[in-house]
Length: 277
Image (cartoon, rainbow, N blue to C red):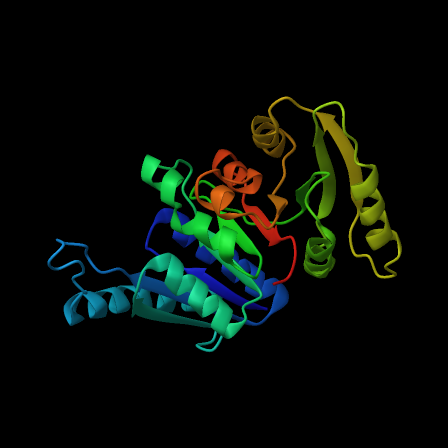
């Protein structure tokens, strides 16, 4: 597995790096840690001031020291975990690297609360979740220290096309072997017949299914709040959701269901793209 970890030196980024190391142990492969340094917007006459060599080298030395410690603590080779510091806006830098080097998974930190600016223009993690081609695991600074993937809550609905996501999840979870609850949050007048049929076809027709699963339907007037509550009370180690292909209005002015769920749930959230581009 080829993993990309955007790193901004925050507590959530440090936790994301720990989750990346856990995944590398399970799947093998390599971890690339990326720190992007933005320029400073100044005035209309001088709209952007680029960081100088002292800033860039300082960030590189700081990141390399963190990576060196992590390699030593986890007995990783230099090839198993490398780092890079570059100049550019974080979201664009992450997405360009992901698309050019074909990563299997992005694991990144996210913040529990968003500012007004983030809600309007999108935080870095929001933008990456919306536009990345590969799955994104969003990790909070308060996510569990003792990392494990024994129980997963997979949220489904009647609208999002989940076939591609199920293929990715099958490959992922046949290795992790987490007990998975597929839960549909119903408003009372809909059902999970179509999605349940797709799930059953996928899972019962695969000979080497490596984990147990259940299908559940829960009536809910506030799915976001109920997901957050269920994730904690149910002792889930991760929630999984599918991000459908949404238009410009939804992407930038009306957060998707999966984006809102990420920020209201302290459990790590694995977000799949509904369809390949």
